[in-house]
Image 1 (cartoon, helix red, strand yellow):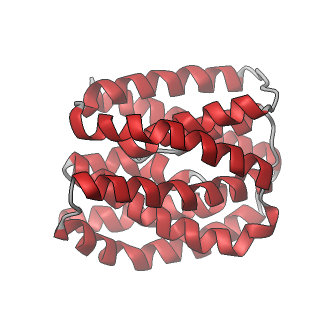
Image 2 (cartoon, rainbow, N blue to C red):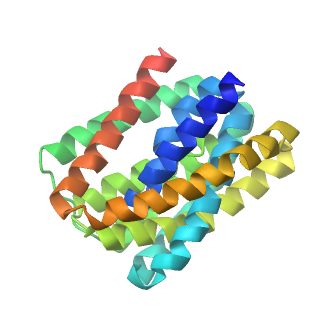
Length: 238
């Protein structure tokens, strides 16, 4: 019961962030799900819930997305997702978490220091590849997109909608690949049913939060999410 209660609270908070920023669920949920469940189950549960939230949200805000950037991110993700799948199957998750945490913290420091990135086709392909790798291995596609879009100063509506549409593409591919190699347990599906009503509640709350965020506050939330994720991954892995 304690794990179910923890899951419900976590999903409510993380889905609110997801609806409000486009990124919050996997960044917030993955570290804590790894404490509540076995690594493979935690990653698959995160992917399933993130996918459901992204599908609901993308339909609502589909008119705001950048279709050209979305296509390049999708193409790049196909490069990274298969190496990520190999990491998911064969590699101990610990060294990967350490590497990801260091990269996130270093990138966040550069963003806070106002280092700007210029948008380009090749950078979006690389961002998609890194995101695909992290989706298949850890269920965390968000950090590369957050770093790239924040550095490029993309407005919050375009950032949120493009990211959510990208998740609708990358999550099913990752989940199918994982399912072909490592079956989804009954416990993951039961946990999904427990969590789903609270995910929908979080979407409702997050939509109202988003309407009250200006661009500056939005960026501060993004930096805080990145910093929290990097520190938490590092502390829980060391």
